[in-house]
Amino acid sequence: MKKFTLIALLLVSGLIFKAHAQEATTNEKLSEVNDKVNGLTERIATDEADLQKLTKIKISGYIQGQYQMTSSPLLDAGSNNYFSIRRARVKFTYEATDGIKFVLQPDFAPGALSIKDAYAVLNDRWTKSFSLWMGKFNRPNYEVEYSSSQREVVERSLVIRTLYPGERAIGAKLEYNPTTLPLHVQLAMFNGADGLTINDRAGANINPNENKDFDNFKDVMARATYNISLGSFGGLDLGAHGYWGQMKAYNTTTLKSDYTTTEAIKFGDPIKRHWIGGEFQLFADVLGGMSLKGEYIAGMNGTTGFSGVPAGTDPVKNPAIPGVANYQNNFAGYYLYFIKNLGKKNQFAFRYDYYDPNTDITGADVAIKKYSPTDPMLKSKTSGQSDLATTTFDFALHHYFDDNLRITLDYAVVQNEKVGTPGKVVNNVNDAHGNPVVVDWSNAINQNVLTLRIQAKF
Picture (cartoon, helix red, strand yellow):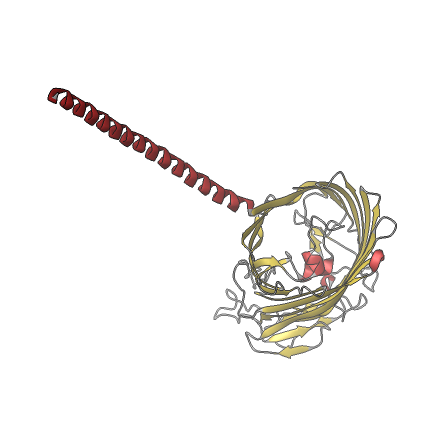
């Protein structure tokens, strides 16, 4: 009996031990499986986080390939007809969190790789009305901010290209878009000399680095627009913008645009660059859709000169080099668009563009109005080609294959202001090979441009 009881106890003990062993093994396997599941969950969570970051990135862009034929003897080009890539841009927009956005847009056009946009935007989370921009972005102006991929003619107007070279500038901007009013207000501060060529006495550009300011002066811009609903007819946008800038003077004499008035200033004093403009955009839902748009800008532009160098102890080896006076000129310019849809796939556009770089000089004054300084260390200056007004009639026809592909045929008729004296030659120019080109400015010089462009967007 005792023997049987001992055997039973051993059997029960073995079963209990085996059960515990199996339980331990099972727990180990469950723990191992659980670790794998947790690891997989962590990887999935990481992948989801990365995917969420990627979904915050928006990529867009466009390429403009074109063929151009010019008829101008003034263009310094080796050929009057050529293929080129006008723009090749990719835009990256990253919405980091609610209210924060980063934008980067390089332009990959051959021979002209550049950063067009690089800025951050901080949006107001409380009133939803304010936003703060900082970096490189478009200057506040209608035609500047109107994307090149949407514009109805191939290039911006001459007054805009002159005042805002490259369109962009580096600085900061505050925007106000109230939720209860169709009002848009922009106030910006820029370095100011972005895109400008400022030459020294040797002809070298002393403003090559657009990432840094040329001087300590900052330029201020402001723009405000208001939208008026016209019901079923369409809408009307009215606006105005102003520019208040200055550049450092490198000469103590400033010549005014009438070529007779001068102002004595100090080295380093500001050369003013001030102007204001008014704009409108009328959109009408009639006859398939049409619009009228225009802007007028007038004010004072300026360029900085440089000081002269007196002769050395040996005037033959080191002769005196006369300086160039600073220059301030009054100007005016405007443009007017007419755009008409032709069905759902075609569009016609016409733009009249006028720019007078010097409103104090007429064609009859060119090469007659002269500045003859009494100071031998200053060069004289004669009115010339740079004072002539330019008128452009631009005709464009677009065909939209779809939302991403557009083909454009554009013809720009460019006419110069004529000088008053027949047979008068002013400011001779050279061609691409250095040969002189004689131009009779008493006639209209043929400067027309034909453009065939294909644009692909994504």
